[in-house]
Length: 141
Length: 387
Image (cartoon, rainbow over all chains, first blue to last red; front, top):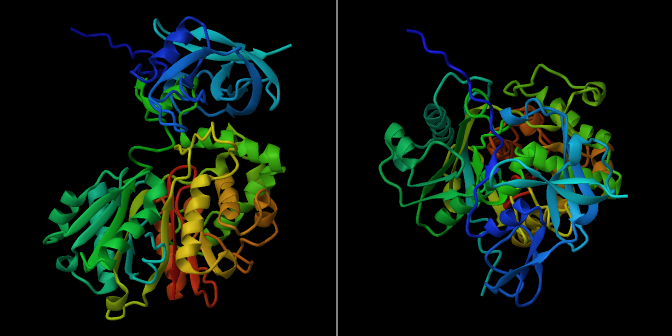
C-alpha cells in the first residue's frame, strides 16, 4: 500500500500571546491600534512591557492611536529567508513613526513597494489567522 | 567605589588556536571546538591539566562538559557563559581576565565553535511557527533575520548623513583585500571589485550580497593567564590593556527601533567610553583594529561610536583610504567576518593578538595597540590589546 505524502504549506510565523503582549494583539484583532502608556507618569512605550522604565510603575493603560504617522525607514526584502515568504518577494517592511511618538513595524497594503522615508501613512489591518491581525500601512492623502 | 581601571594590564592572551574555515568542516562542532582549544594550548606550551577556567558564549552548541571530557581537563574553578552571541566575544575575554586577575584561575580557555554553513545557518530564519518576545512584533511581517533588521537601521544612516552604497563597499573591499593576503581566509583566492559590489544582487535593500558576512564552519580559541605569568610561556603575550562590555539604554537585539536614533550604537558608545577610561589612551593611539563586520553599515557606525571619526562621517572616513592596509587605521587585517570567516567575532580576537605578536599576514608595522570590537546593535564588548 502506498501512502500519499503532501508537504504542508509553509506557515507565517505568528506571535505567541502572553500576559505582556495580549492587549496589543487583541486590539489589532479588533482592527484598532492601541499604545501602552504608563498609568502614572504617562510615558508611552512600545513594544509593551510590564514596567515603565521612566518611573518603574507596574500600572499601565492603553490609549487609542490615531493610526497616522510617517515612514521612518523601510526595507525591501528581495531574497526570502523563511519558506512562508518565498513567494512573496520582493516585499516591503516599514518602520512607521506614529504621530503619538512610538515607532511600529508593519507591512505595506497591497504589497506596495512605493515607499519613501517621510511618506505620510495611515494604518489598516490584515487578518492572518483566527487570533491575529497585522498592521498594514497605506499612503495617506 | 567603582574603579574602572582595575582590570588594566592584569591579564594577557598567551595562546591562540583555530581550525580551518570552510563551507563544510566534515566534523562535529564538538570536534572543531577541541581541535581549536588544543591548538591554543599547544601555542601557549600548556597542557589540558593546566586549564582551570573556561568561558564561552550563549549561542554555542558545545559546552564545558563536551570539552572537559574530550580534552581531559581535570577541574574548573570558574566557568561562565557570556550572552548576546556575537556581542559577547570580547565580553568572554573580559570575564576570563577577571578570573585570572582575581587569582581564582591560572589559565582560562575561551572558545567558539560552529558549523554555521553546513549546519544551522544564522542567515536563514530559524523561526518557529509561533514567536515570543520582541521578535513577535517583527517576524510575522517577514522581518526575521539579522541582515533584514540591520537594513532598517542602515537606511537611516543613508538618510541622515548621506552615507552611500559606495561607502559600504569600501568596507567590503578593504576586508576582501586583506583576505586576499591570508591563506587561511575563505576568500583568499577571490577578489572583489567595486563593480562586483555595485552590481551584486540585493538581499534586504539597501543591503546587497557583499554587505553580509560569511557563514562558516570552524572554531577559534584562546588561552589567558595573569600578566605576571604570561612571560613564562612560549609566545609574546598580548596584554589586555582594557576590556569592556556595554548595553546602553534602551537596549535591544539588532532592532533598536524605538531609540531616539538608529544611527548610533549606544551600546558601543558606552563600551568605548569604559574601554578608553580603563586603558588611559584614546582612539587616536590605536594602531590597528578588528571591527566586527557582520554587516558593512555597522562597521561605519562602529568607527564613529569608538571615536575614530565624527558621527555621520564614517562613510567618507572608510572610503578615503583610512581603513586599508597602509592607511591611518587599518581594519580587519585577516579579512574579517566578511572575507576571512565568520566565527562570530572570535577570529577577530585571534587576529588582534597576531597584530601584537607581529605575525599577521597583513601586519601593521610596529603595532603597539590593537583594538578588537564585538557585535554592535546588541549588548556588546571590546578589548584593547597591547604589546
